[in-house]
Length: 125
Image (cartoon, rainbow, N blue to C red; front, side):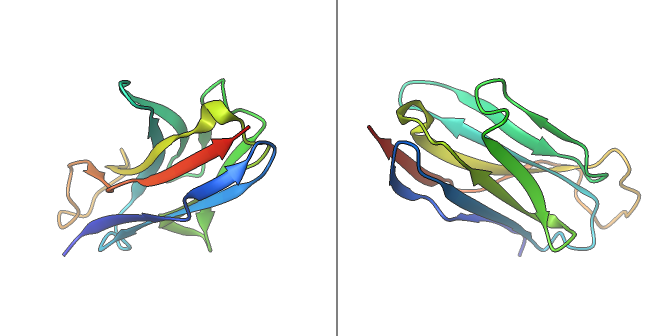
């Protein structure tokens, strides 16, 4: 059973830090691109950060320099999102997404995207 599971959300005061974790369970043998999105009430999901199978990272302008995405123990199916200097506008539901890497060659690895259920982050002023 493949699933994407996030953890680590919570409530924090402005200026504080949180670390989110995401594991794409069942995808350890696959080449994965991993992403964090966030969704505020009455808004769509916006890309926050991305780390490709080859380690290349990209960030939204709003979080660059404050957030860091990284692989967990060099596992391409598990990532952290370290969030520093949090602001009230960072309050949102954070979702992890797994996409197949363009380098994928294993026929047993799905070529479909897989979302997690999300974890809430609340930053108070």
